[in-house]
Length: 188
Image (cartoon, rainbow, N blue to C red; front, side, top):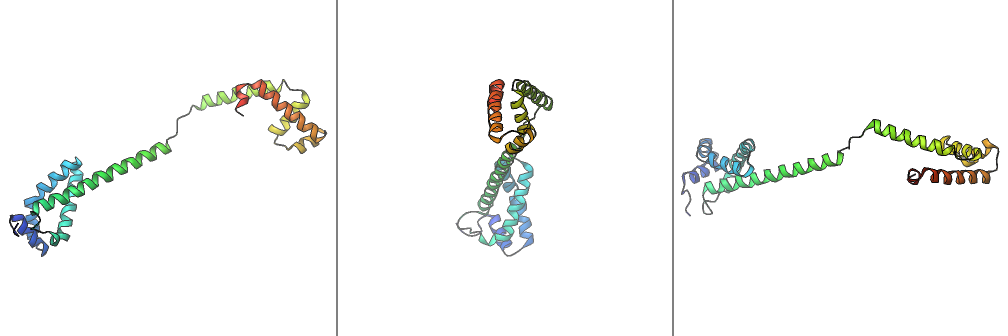
């Protein structure tokens, strides 16, 4: 192919020499082609306008890279527009995937505060009922250890009982509570 076969080829050579008038002429002659390519690929006129602007900025900077022996100026421009449009589609798709992943990771299931409070009260009521089935010695030891937050040694001192006895009372009391609570006690 000979150099300057199409009017756009000649304009592009002049753009490489920083001829602003040639740049304007190139845009007027080929802008619809670049814009149309971008619209077909990205499907959005706003993005296509941005891509068209990016293409012509690239052309201004790289017009000297154009080789008329390899194809027409129009083909070169369409190639640049297509490449930039595909990059934009991929970028937007990746952004959407990142946003979806973030939304999925940060999603908190709504909860019913009233239902949760009722369930806690029901559980607490079941535990209280089961505590009433323990002997007084077991109930005192379990209550001091689990509700009072005391160590076995502290419970033994408070109840004035030997440490091994307190450990046995707590162990037997907990076993009885588990049986009494059934499935509720199996999870704790």
